[in-house]
Length: 238
Image (tube, rainbow, N blue to C red):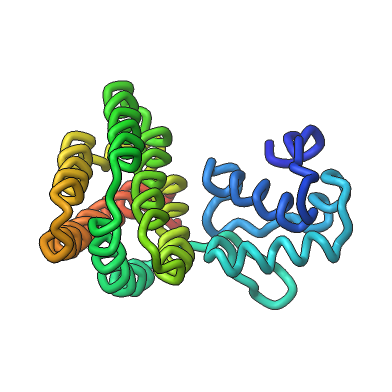
């Protein structure tokens, strides 16, 4: 499927080819076309997408920086998350995101409120249709929009780097599963928007830190449920 699409890929040629290649492969990972633990078919991709091995290697290095793939010897595989990985990600997120949201509250605007209202509406429509992929994409954009409106660009940069692996896990592992409570997710994001609108940075920081703890707990429960479901579908050893 991925290689068939690679032949027809409409890559953005306005920038470096390595960026176009990295974005194409990132999209494939987030859509589940390259699965966790799957090896990246470097030679075939290079041939069928029409760029050099060096450009592909640079693209893979970029994806490693984004946390989406890992190198083992001369091969690259799509990143898998363990419970320890989840704990590490949430430990960093719990430090950075509440502080970023506090700064965002002090730089609030009606335009930002309108953007987040639109994203919550997108999440609502996706929840109504039980479309996890659309819901998760709007969820991701909700958080990234908040990070982008505060003045500390290092917060934004490192939150994107840390959380990209988490979002990839969400989209790849949860898509098509019944492990997300849409109503609860909508309530939680509405809470974030409400406290941001109050422009009380200290309260925002406390609320977001508490919600991140809940997100982590929910991900642990869902992670175990997904793994148990996968084990049940795998035939046992004779």
